[in-house]
Figure 1 (cartoon, rainbow, N blue to C red):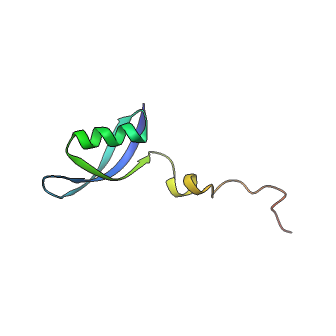
Figure 2: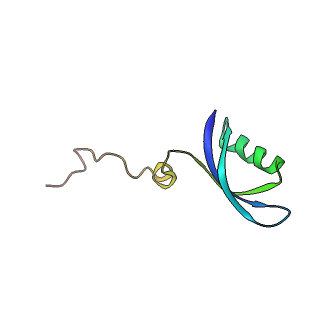
Amino acid sequence: MQTFLYSAHKTESGETVKAEVQAESEREASKLLMSQGLFPISIDLKGSNSLFDKTGLGGRVSSKDRVI
């Protein structure tokens, strides 16, 4: 099980909620939220910096890429 941080709209009131959910995958987390009457806006793995993880930025600079 992984922990995901999510932002979602409540379908009845339109209110935005932010919380955590535990699921096997992002897709399963989305299904779980929708079954609870929530419309997911974003779902990110807790503990990861999603922008850097998705783009590959933020890693180490190789010696080949260093400029002196």
